[in-house]
Image (cartoon, rainbow, N blue to C red):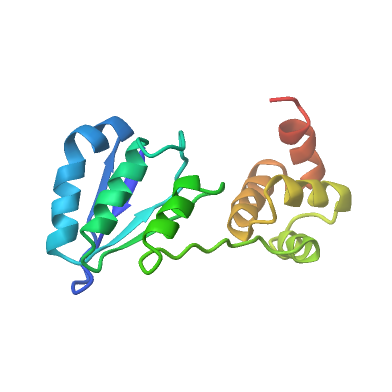
Length: 167
């Protein structure tokens, strides 16, 4: 499921549309491209995962079309993994594409964050949790809430039942 959140840049309202990838390419693409060429918008693709990498890949085609008709709208693509077609588009549209890799916080900061969120000081499990969640502060905050609420704030219990149980 994709979520496009796109407030016009000159208004304070937010429009959100959710649809499947198939719907996007069969029904929504033309409408969205038309809106992007008539109004400036900020579009966020959160949790984006690329299925393939070639010039016929649907998102590659969409973003090529978007960049060719560029009118000042902005796309922000959040992805855990690198989106390979963005590099190709960056080469083709160097003045319109900016790619930024954001790293998680460091090991010590991850442990400090988990402890500050009320987890027990069970160092080896804290380290394992930090590693599993790539030291991503957002993910660590969410998982710390789960550990506090379901596992009595015990990282050891969480690791035993969730990470080490093989599922």
